[in-house]
Structure formats: C-alpha cells, structure tokens
Image: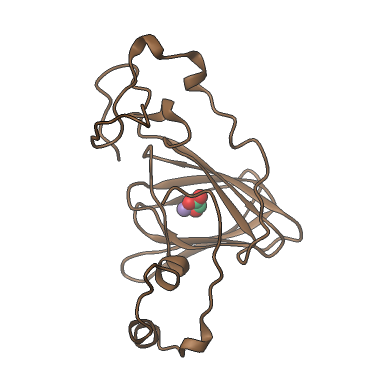
Length: 197
Ligand code: GLV
Ligand code: MN
C-alpha cells in the first residue's frame, strides 16, 4: 500500500533533522550490507502479560533497509491460551503463516461478518487492510506465527488498550455508554510490548 520506490536504495535515516512522509535516505556512501539484514525476530517474545502474547514488529523503525519498499514482517508468540487482541493496521493488509501451534484467526468486515478458522503449522491467512482482527491460541502448548505486511510501517491500533488505556483516558461516560458496560468491568493492565504505535 506504500508508494513505489524511486531508486534502488533508500536506507532510512531515522534521526534525520528533516521530516518527510516516510524517512529520508541516508547518504549512499554510508550504506552498508548490514542495512539489509535484521535478526531482531529470531528470539521468542516475552508473553508474560495480561494477553499472553508478544508482537515483535520488524518494521522500518527497527530495520531501516525496509524504507520505501512497502514491506515488513512481525513475529507473534503466544503462551498457552494467549490472545493477540482485536486490532487494526491502518496502513497495510496482512498475510501470515503459522509456524507452531494451533491458532484461531479471525477478522470482521465493515458489514460485521466474521471470517475465522483454526490454523495449524504451515497454514496461511490474509487480513484485508484496516479490518479488525485477532488470533487466539487454541492449542495445547505455545504458538507462533510470522506475518508480512504491504507497508514498511503498518501501524497498529490495539482496540482494548487504545480505548481503555489512552492518556488522558476516554471519559467513563463514553466507554460505559458505548460498550454498555459498568466501569467496574474494565481494568486493562498496561501491556508493555515493542509496538511502534
Ligand atoms: C498480527 O495480527 C500482527 O499484526 O502481528
Ligand atoms: Mn495484525
């Protein structure tokens, strides 16, 4: 979904003093082979949090070689019973492949139709851009999938934390009326993960 590149290489200069849509390219004479490789998704994420999952985003902010290429990858780990809670990527469609375990994967269309399926290792899914989706570990042990995006920085809007943990908070009158719940029923504890937001 990102614009096309206009040149072979445009490794992001994440600390540039000018700001553009995306990131400016660092000077060509500073480009190194290492700019095009990234090992940050090689380790299992820490799933000790309220959701029992961990999203590690391999996007342009950690892998500057992705700049202008309209691509990125996430690694998502699950503890037993863990959930990657309902969320949206404003700038990308997502496709994923289950590497380990058994996951219920679902998304909801703008006409409120749920499409979902339980997937096992080797099986793939696609989430259309901007739609609410989730994954729940329904297997007996840990689970893991890798997801690819057609954006160097898909962005992520996690619904529970966005709605119930914003700063300042959304007034209780908005949340209780909108969700038809009593305020004592929601108490999301901060999920510290490595998302770029
Ligand atoms: C999974 O849906 C992810 O966005 O990493
Ligand atoms: Mn997603």
